[in-house]
Image 1: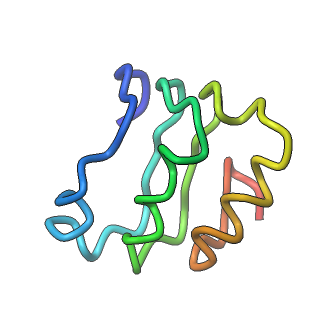
Image 2: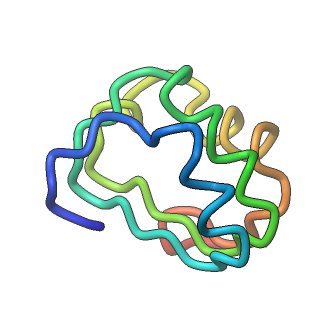
Image 3: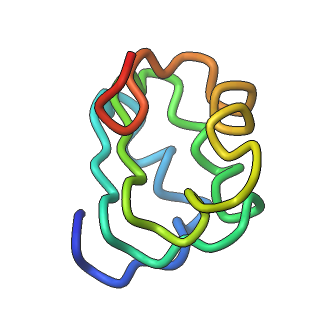
Length: 79
């Protein structure tokens, strides 16, 4: 879903994609930590990229994602 101007994930998406393991949201428009909280609902998510979103420039971005989505093993292509 990279490069699509995505700003949020609808609440029903994690239910519909409950086995999703990889989510590449590179170069979209996520701008706030609150936009990322829904990611915790993807219980099988292991690989996540939010690279080149405005939220990645915020202080403690990486720490926030790791605490919010602890099942992720790779964030922005880094272990």
